[in-house]
Length: 558
Image (cartoon, rainbow, N blue to C red; front, side, top):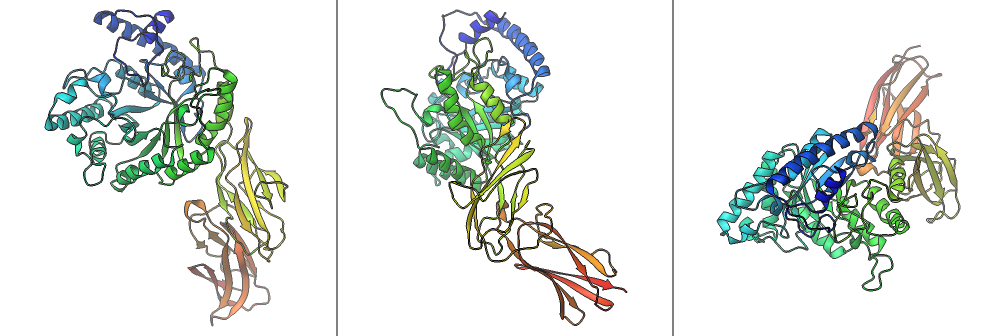
């Protein structure tokens, strides 16, 4: 049965494009009945095998806030659930693969992939609704009105048949591939220059309710001009609330030529790749690496290239999922046959153990504060927790390259109160997450400049979202009472220290005690006031931090 399955996988009777197809093999002739029978048998066999695998394994990214998935052209992919928690049909979901006659759809290849995803709790992304490179042959013979109706019916049919889709690539490669022959039927360039793309997304929003709509493109990361042009379309869709995800393909050829290439050798700058990715994530729209692969025949070369490019994508907090464009040897893009991660038998290439360990390690933490000049010498360092991290390695240096350390320590909390540093010193700091599988890459580097003061700060507890002063407790009191006040992080979790004033005044408005008068980092603090020596009566605690002012009434009863 496995041999028969592989034959079918190598020589499917359905028409396939040159973008995602199994490797070439011997030619075989199939009757319609034989094809249907084989599809049923193979679907049952593969489903049984994969359900057994699922019971004994977990996908690589099962504990993360982002997915690792794969594309497949088979009804259900072998060993799929052992590794992936998201699936994209590589070829079966394209309009040209489904509709060979106007108004008629053959979902035979696509249904098993969708059903497998739903039954096994996998995220399903449909690929793709509108793409100029693979459209039905009959569409070109229609007039504009008929083309428009056909596109709308296609999008509506997909939405109705697959209502539990998680994502859909609405428009594929608008910048680089031939434009659809029905572009003008969707409005052409129009006033925006991209009216036809907008119309496709409007229909997708209408007919695919609750599904995240994605625009997909390649050659974006290594080419700044392409990235800027891509952002034009993205922002047009964002302004109309029509886009939920940015697709970036991430094929190996988008980063560099093959190792050892003798002609046409090139390597795109890593800083350019990172910068363009950051431009896309800065939109606030989740980014999905939709078609990632590394095409190297020598195992050691494939691992080496994964170690360069995969962390750039996986570690970026704006990237919420990566889909490998094929994963098993006989189900990869035929033009790039060495991208596979498993061979025909399911044996892992050496990159898979590395990938498993890397994904199991924590993601780099996100730094919160400080990021600027501060008034004190002993600030709190504050960062967000990293999923699965059990401790954190913190480094502070006077060098931006961390050539020597002022602090080099490991803590279990997400804060660290520094001992007093030299006044007027520019310091750089970074944090790495650690768990039983290893350490993450370091976070982005932040810097601050120390002031002259030394703060007597109580223990920081957590990072709140707003300013606040709590009622003192106990109240009435004699002779001591405590206050809790909150200092939030700024936008996107970024904030330097805040100058906080916390004073006690009497009923005449006279200041009788200063509890806090210094810069402090975001957090929740408790301050104690000892009113020994003060007469009984009504007092007020007044907090001021920037434009925030709050006052609490209290009673000293001796």
